[in-house]
Structure formats: structure tokens, C-alpha cells
Amino acid sequence: MILVADSGSTKTNWIAINDRGETHFKIDTHGLNPAVFSRETLYDRVITKKELVDIKDEVKEIYFYGAGCGTKKAADYLKDLFQDIFINAHIEIYEDTIAAVKSLQTDTPGVVCILGTGSNCSFFDGKETHQKIVSLGYMLMDSASGNYYGKQIIKDHAYGKMPVELAKKFESEHDLSPDTIKTNIYKKDNPNTYLASIGRFLIENKNNDYAQKIIKDGLRFFVENQIMQFEECKHVPIYFVGSIAHFLHDEIVEVLNEYDLKLGKIVRHPILTLAAGHASKLTK
Figure 1 (cartoon, rainbow, N blue to C red):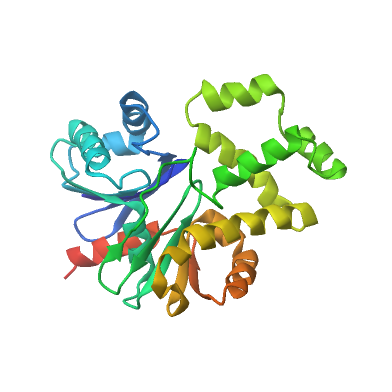
Figure 2: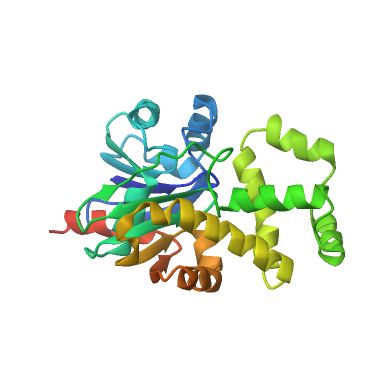
């Protein structure tokens, strides 16, 4: 049995593949970002999932692609945790940018961007990925991500900068009391996921002029500070992976056009392509 997983901070998609290369099951767990969550939280999120526990001794290989796995320390941390559960498995941990590149199914060079709960950017030369900036996480970076947009609209609402009618709708859908916001950000687990859940409000109301400005300003910041770090960006496609990218397709096209950049394609769920690639090796 092989397990393939694609993980962000909010959710992890798992596909189990049997020895014939067939899908045994597809499931989701909460996110497994080793840079954000404690070992206890990560362990519980795996060990409490019945489908994973039922096959834990049968799993021979695990290929895990995840946010927060870009350093050796983080990858080893997660690998050791998995080894305690899947005792018979060979385990390989990759950062989420590798999943993004593989899901594109291309050997054409391009800039590969992730826009989900968090964000990231790398250059794919046709064979290998290259990264100039190491992410410092949701508090300092993650521009144009779900949690980034959540922070923007919470602050705008608090400062009275949100249009009145939109503010009323925002208040009707979310508990925006200072105590609730501060508890979720400073005391509870998953503050980045909480912020991303707030950020969905902006995406759901993206036709509003205010929302369009916040969205495009975030995308412009991402282009200028992430995409344009690579000189090649003017000459290669710009690829995107993730749910935020999926829902902001039109806005991404418009902003890229402002900088004379060309969109390649957008992939919402890398897991299907990742699993198919590993399954094909079993049937050869």
C-alpha cells in the first residue's frame, strides 16, 4: 500500500493506492504543517483518522507534499512522526512547491506559485525548482493568500474602512468581537487557518469594488515581491496552484496583464495528479 498526501495548513488530501495501482480510498484530514502545529496536534490529526489507522501496518511507502516542509528540520520532524505510526513505511517528505510542479505535468520552464491558505513561489527550469526567498510564514509573508486576505479585512473592518453595507454583511456572518478575534489568533491552534476562513468572505464577495481593490492589491504585492524576483518571469508562463488561485482566476489574469506576464494554467487540487504519477510506477 502506498499513501500520497498533499497538505496545506487547512486541509490534507490523502489517496491510498493498493499494490495493483488502484485507488483504495480518498480522504481528507486537517492540515499537517510542521511549521505551525505541535507534534501532539499533528499526531492526533493522523491517528484519529480510522481509514489511516486501519492500514497503517500495510503501508510500505508514503509520499508527503506539504506546506511548512521546506527546511530539513521541518521535513525530518514530520518524517519521524509518521515513522512512529506507519512503522513499515519508507517515507519521503517534500515541500508543497514540488507538488505544485508535479501537478502541472509539464517540462516547460515557468514560475510556479501557490495561493491557498498560505502562499509561495519558485522557478521551475524544466527539471528542478529554484527558490530565492524562504517563507517566514503567515505572520510576515503569505501575500495574496487566504490568511493574508483575512488579516486585511479584519483590520479594515476594525478601522472602519469597509463599505457600510458590506460591513453589515460581514458582521452577520462572522463573530467580529475583539475577544473572539484575539482568542482565535493568539490562543487557539491554527490561527492561519482561522484567518483564511475569514478571508473567504472577500472571495465570496469579490464583485464588490472594495473587494476587488483588496484582492488586486494583494496580487500586485505578490507579483512584485515573489514572481518578479525571477528575471525569467517575463519570458515563461506563470503557473498557479491552490484554491485561492482557482477562485481568483480572472483577477490573476488581469493583474498579470498589468505586468506583461503570461498565465500558464491554474490547478486547484494537485493530489489527483500526484497520486496518478505514483500509481503508474506500480503498473510498469
